[in-house]
Length: 101
Image 1 (spheres, rainbow, N blue to C red):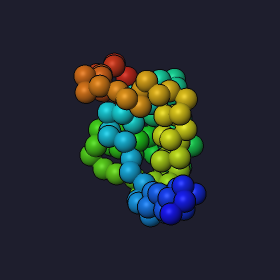
Image 2 (image 1 turned 45 degrees about the vertical axis):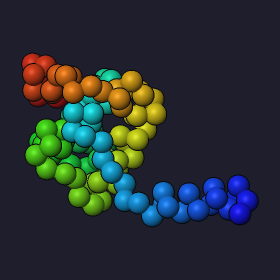
Image 3 (image 1 turned 180 degrees about the vertical axis):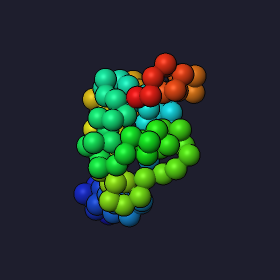
């Protein structure tokens, strides 16, 4: 089997997997690294700010079509802010920073 065939097989496996959202604390860390508010994210994704709050706290998960847009945003932020994508568990939560987002 050639390297090209192997590469295509790997791509097929990866493309068949469902997209996974980062953990809630990383979602918040990515947003904060970009200097975005929860309202900024809500407006871009098409939801209310409280939905973003719940997503970042792990209380709920986004559903279609918002999930795809939110995931796309998070992926873009992770590319621009890789240090935030690898956030440690000790990061402050959005509510502990003295604001609602």
